[in-house]
Image 1 (cartoon, helix red, strand yellow):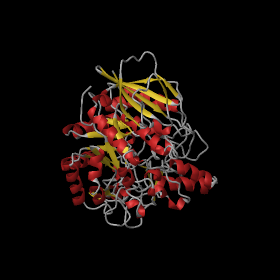
Image 2: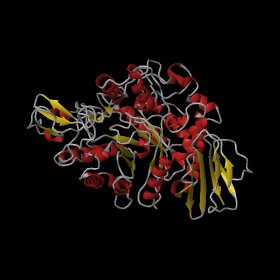
Image 3: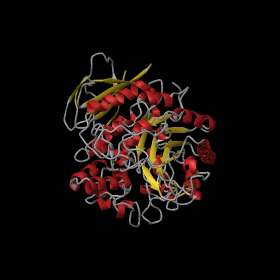
Image 4: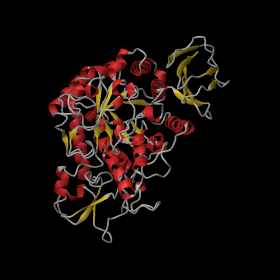
Length: 563
């Protein structure tokens, strides 16, 4: 297996709107990020993935881009971005930008031109179809509720938008579109960026003819993923992107790829024949959704540790020696990890440390989402009026106003699953607005900021933050954590997740109690050793403990080196 800097990195995701506000307008910005770079350096991360900061009308918080080569004025100017890059590089931190090229904003100059007439030179930059029987061209459902088609009166046709109606899908069949995108990528890479996170990149190829989706429910619109996810020309487009752009730079590339299998992942991330370094798979993100649900955020069920083991083990083993994993438990689109996979009440600190141990001791590149390192939790706003996410607000309107669901039941799902759980401002201190802004924040601060914040964590040597620092440092000091082979043990245990990591001359044992109970861990007899050293644990541990038989405390995590 080749050793590379991006395998050995720890990536920190910044959602700029919610990170740090420098000018009191209630919106996080680039100068706010610059002011916190020493904090990130001290944490130990060496790559920052920056969610979109491009010029945008902000219908989907920057994922609707109107100018790929300029900065959203709320965040600052291009000169501020250039200073941010310089200051990151000065501290040994690389910058990965978000690449959003499945769609643009409907306010992008290309689309403004495209909608003027059917014979406009930019018309074929997007996907247009005439009405079918006086209605939409097909029955596809948008990810943000309703039809995936929007009627455009000036030219009497519909355009495709898999997401918001203000996010028309680009037509990747058009070579001019691809050339424009590759030219834009070169522009940023020549400015010095260190890679791209590619938004829904496996949706850029649509099936010819755009056929109707199978009817699997009584809904008016149906999920058409089989016709636009992992489409017929996806690998061709990624290969062209690699040849034209990516092969000319030493960069980190990660694709956001819903509904991929490990076979897709190997095709895309194979070191010799693949196109990207790694990708984000979503199987573990769907464990708490009802099977077959159109949206994983519109349904909820308890998740099971056995299912998590099964999913993560398959990804670890199938990609071993063939591709590379991205490791994440939360991001800007997901609820807070400690609220979802841990215990955000009595055992918040212990379970947040356990989840961190899990994340950082698997094979792959770990991604830490802002606030995760202090154990930030979900928020339960009492009114839909306090939510800002377009998907959340559309879902509430659809289920309550159109379908007649109980508002409190819908809010309960939103409290568990809304993307806004991840988007409340970072809690820097116990002062006004959690130290995020001197003004009124664009979305309310989580009320628990007085007890959960960075200042408190820095002052407490036993905090989640200091535990993250130790984990990140351990990973830097121990190549086995990056490159060691993963083997699951106790696969049928419903509370304990345990595994070994192995290199020819080194071996680790990871023991994780994913419960508030006190189960007994019994080490299988085939794992022989003569001595052991504790590398890290989230409780005080006696050196004399017999690790062959341990009674674990709630959400206890231990990592041993076996000799």
